[in-house]
Image (cartoon, rainbow, N blue to C red; front, side):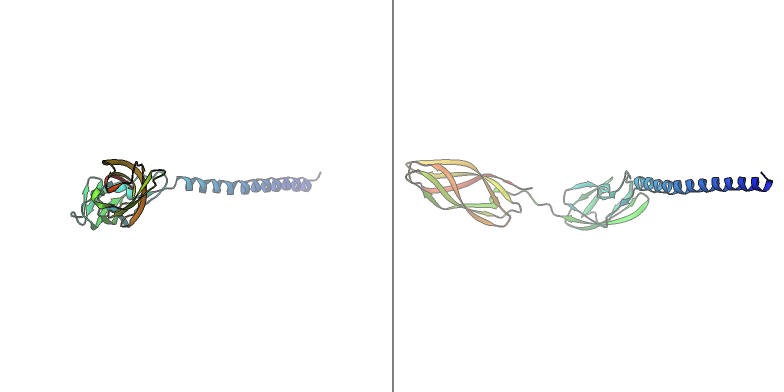
Length: 220
């Protein structure tokens, strides 16, 4: 074999080797890039401080609880200040609703100063018995089965939906008797309703029927 042929053979082998190596690198490079991007997406994390928030009077909440986080990012809050202590006060890392109204909370969240406008709502007070008005408006009595139903009217003036009531009926048969039972019911705030309440089997037609609510349950 001549020197020229040997040289061409070696050159061809080199070119083939370089071509194969380049192809391998091109195949590996996109995979490495994709893996790097995926890893970055999995480990990235951030916080989002809301511009507005709300709290009830008498409620105490950690300020960091209003911050939305992603990943395992920790929230570091410093220099918490309120624009109106009569409406919203600060106690350490907590904010406390004092009075209905609006106040601004300024603080440093993870090194960045942010402001949140808080609306303080008046907390609904617990409903009382006098907020459920009850009266008897009629009754039905079957002399054969002796089953007795009393027509009862409810007026809910509270801010809650009443779900169950414990009633005490007093009535006169041959003598005065009392019937106490608990009934499931659904009366929304500010509404009225009438319901036929079954009080049991009585020996005779009742008269002088009166009703009293002993207690009730409601949706929180």
